[in-house]
Image (cartoon, rainbow, N blue to C red; front, top):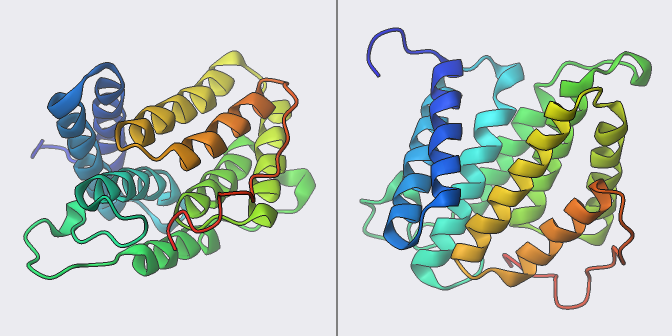
Length: 211
């Protein structure tokens, strides 16, 4: 994709590979997710600051999961997708956290009554990605409330299906790398969005997903 490169086109390409990953198996699945990560990184480079949250949250989630798969160690990835040629171990969690904080700070500040659907989505997606890196019960509760606000705010079924598909892909991605504790968190969030009732206390056995 050399002609007419735009953030939107790379985001679409990333989403396409991400869905391919959901449908694929074994090496083909990993390769599809790697292609998605690469496309989202390119979208990030071309996006204005206020729109970076979407590609950033996607490629960080993918890189985080694949890094855990490569090392078998929670929170100490020896090699990330962005640094596959590095000879020394690289722990990217600090860099990822800074990127997410910057993406959150770059979002337009609006009063509660003037927030639109995408304002809620941006904050919730960023906080969700932060939870993938470092879990806390307080942040999980905040993120759950944000997603529930989105659910009530979203006026059409397409927006709701998009949110559920995003969670399904994350379940598949972290299932592929065997991160059952992270899957449990995602599944509970999905149940809440679908109107179910769950015990949101995930503290037992959940802290230290990446610590």
